[in-house]
Image (cartoon, rainbow, N blue to C red; front, side, top):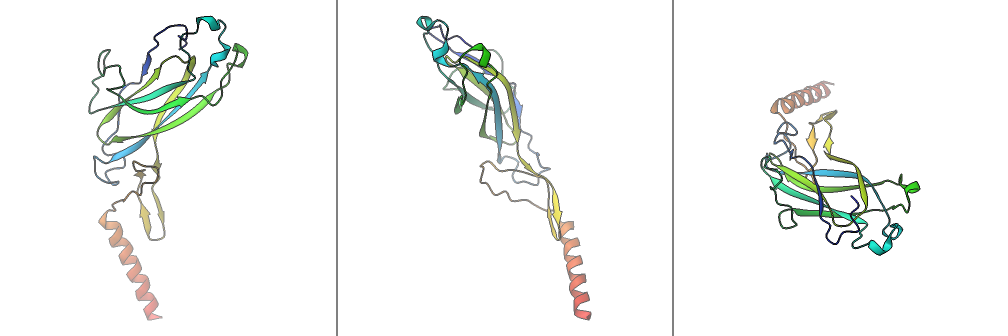
Length: 197
């Protein structure tokens, strides 16, 4: 993207529909419609506005672009839907470059930014990058969520659990009853053995 010499710049890069399964963690992490936090990692390069070879032709130049999201329950995307405007999409954030390059020799200067958003389980989202005058190259977009791996320590058993909708969320996990029964039986047996001594 590098249309800085145009008076109106409105470039969109929309990712395919991303569905969030309702049973991400086998149904143990809460209600099937509880939101989860998706992370969007973007790697890109950005050219400095002042380094444009013909400054007299500059109409519009920015050193940022927007990350937008459109929540959907199914893949309804085509060239007309969802519509290409700010009213339809919600803004996740403005992504600005920490490092910009001045000439082609410095074009290897790469930026990495991560943004988070909430999406309901069982639903999905269209993500879009909107350029309104940046001279940028998007190298990679990665979408992921964070999970706590299943673990067991002494009498505690924690199943695979998807992190909550906020960075600070505490997620309640449900346990199968046979684990409590087994742990209770083991505990009673040890207490009984201690009583005999």
